[in-house]
Image 1 (cartoon, one colour):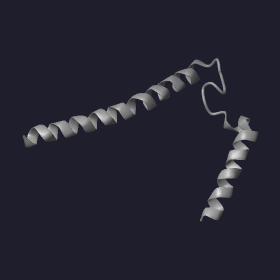
Image 2 (cartoon, rainbow, N blue to C red):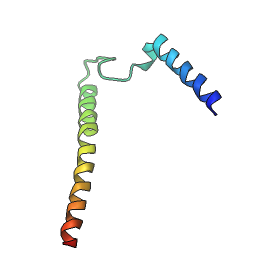
Image 3 (tube, one colour):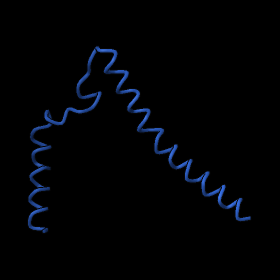
Image 4 (cartoon, rainbow, N blue to C red):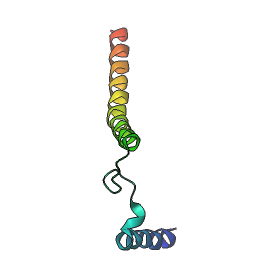
Length: 71
């Protein structure tokens, strides 16, 4: 298994370094003047920022409520 993974990893690493234009997938890599695209990037960034915090807060709230119920 390692004989396959190491060459594959090295190949992907070399391709990433030599051909960075293929990886243009962020708002900074492909600037645009379209308002819809900018709004989509802002909304998706906000979602990816706040959703994990919401999940963590929900878990903490659930554990706290369970603890209070047991007391």
